[in-house]
Image (cartoon, rainbow, N blue to C red; front, side):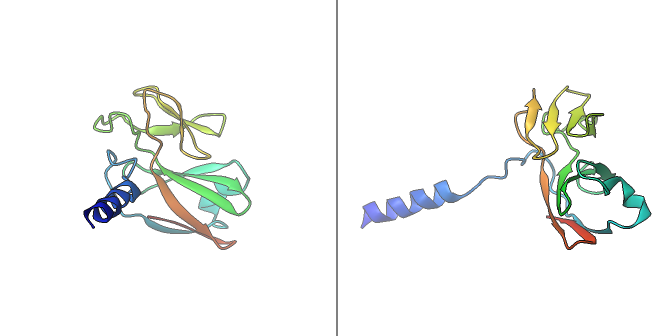
Length: 137
């Protein structure tokens, strides 16, 4: 019986997923936006992006396809205690750079392109019904 209990506990522990971005403060996000609103015209084309207020240090919303969006916190995952740890979009429209530490992130999935950061950007959930984009956690 102890053997089975040990296996169950081990499976439970291994099944628990730690938040990969635990070094970024959790901030409640629940944003609704009408993509036809002129203030969001920057999201009209595929591979376009905008900044939104919210999250820990702002949010990058990236349009992956006509009906799919990704949203990431701008707070860099490397030494997040630094006040300058902020990711800004680059002119290529697919990567963001933290000028403070030099880390570069791919905004199609939040992954690290160049370190010293090793953790991806914190991603927020998105849903889109054809007119309204909801960004939330």
